[in-house]
Amino acid sequence: MITTCLKDNLLKRLPFHSPPQEALEIFFLLPECPMMHISNNWESLVVPFAKVVCKMSDQSSLVLEEYWATLQESTFSKLVQMFKTAVICQLDYWDESAEENGNVQALLEMLKKLHRVNQVKCQLPESIFQVDELLHRLNFFVEVCRRYLWKMTVDASENVQCCVIFSHFPFIFNNLSKIKLLHTDTLLKIESKKHKAYLRSAAIEEERESEFALRPTFDLTVRRNHLIEDVLNQLSQFENEDLRKELWVSFSGEIGYDLGGVKKEFFYCLFAEMIQPEYGMFMYPEGASCMWFPVKPKFEKKRYFFFGVLCGLSLFNCNVANLPFPLALFKKLLDQMPSLEDLKELSPDLGKNLQTLLDDEGDNFEEVFYIHFNVHWDRNDTNLIPNGSSITVNQTNKRDYVSKYINYIFNDSVKAVYEEFRRGFYKMCDEDIIKLFHPEELKDVIVGNTDYDWKTFEKVHHQV
Image (cartoon, rainbow, N blue to C red; front, side):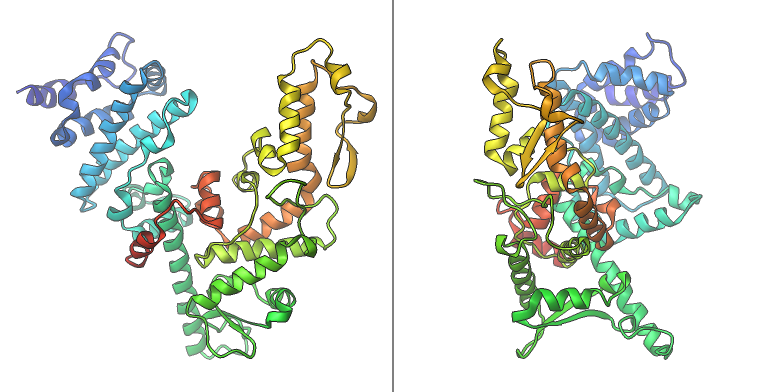
C-alpha cells in the first residue's frame, strides 16, 4: 500500500524545475523511507526518484548535494547502497532496451553526484561505490566498442547517446574490472591488426606496404647476450601501429617459440638488465629499494622513450614487470602531484628529515637546522630558487622549502627524461583507459600485487 502510494502519487508529482527550498525537503526525506531500501522496489521507487533528481536545475541539485554533505557516514553509505542495489538489480534483467538504458543512466548519474560529494568530504572509502558484479555481468567487448564509437562520433547520434557507457563512471569499477576492460581493449586492438594484415596480404599490397605492416604479429628475435642492443635496434624499425599487435618473441639459436612463457622470460630478463644499478639508466637513493630517473643521465633521451615503450608493451601484452618505481611515477602518469609521503618511499631518510623539519615548532629553528634553499640530490647541488644558497630556511618559509624540494626531485630535475618515458608509455597505451585507474591500482597492474587471486582472474579473463 505504501509502495503504491509512493509510486503512483508522490513520485509522479515531485517538483524538479527550480523548486523552492521548502519543496526540496521531500528529496531529503524520501531516501529515509524504509520502502526505498527494499530491493524489490528498485524499479518502482528508486529509479523514478533518480530520474527526477537528474532533471533538477543546477541550483537545486547543488542544494541537494550540500545537504548530502551533512549526512552522517552511516546514512550517506546507506544512500549510496540504495542506488548501487538498483544498478545491480537492473543488470540482472538487462536487455539493453531504451527504457533500461535510461534507468541505468539515471542511477549512475545519481551515484556520480554522491561520489562528487564524497570526494569533497573524503568520508567513505572509494570501494563503497564499486559495483563488484560488473566483473561478471558487464559485456566488456560491447563496452569497449561503445567507448570507441563514442570517441569517434563528434556529434553523437541518438542511438549512441541512449546507450550507457559504464566506464564513463569509473568509480563503479573495482580494479579487476578495470584490468578486464584494459585487457579486452588490448585483445580487440590485436584482432583488428590481424584482420587488417590479412586484408592487406590478400590485396597483394606488398609494394606499397612495409614488410612489418603485412605481418599479423609483432615478431622479435633477440640474442640473450645482446638483449638490450637487439631490442632497441628492432624497436626503432617499427611504426607505432606495428607495436600494437600480438607480441611473439624468440631467442636466437633456441628451439621453441612464444606460447606465453618465452614472452614473460623476455620481459623479465630485459627489465632486469635495464634497471640494474650497474647499467646506469636509473638512480637508487641510498638506503632505498626504489629507483628513479637520474638528474644527469648517461644515456640519450631516446633510450628513456624506448623504456617507456617497453613498459607499455609489457602492459599491452598483459605482462607483470618487476620495476621498483615508487608510487610517485604512477601518480605522474595520471597527472597527479607526488607528495612528501612519496618522497618517504623513494628516499626514507630524506623524507624523514623533511618531516622532522615540518614538525619542529621551536624558536631556535634556524640554529638547529641551519639549511638554505639549495639541495644535494643524485650527486648534484642546485638552488631551489634564485640565489637559494644564501636564503635561510625558517619557520615562515619551511613549507615552501619542502614543497620546492619535492617538486625538484619528482619534476624539475627529471623533466626531460621523464617526458620521454611518458611519451613512449602512451605510444602503447590509451591514456583515456589508463586514467580510469588510481595510482595504486595502476602500480598493481604494471608491477603486480600479491594480494590478488590472479588465477581466478585469469579464468575470468579467458572468458572475455
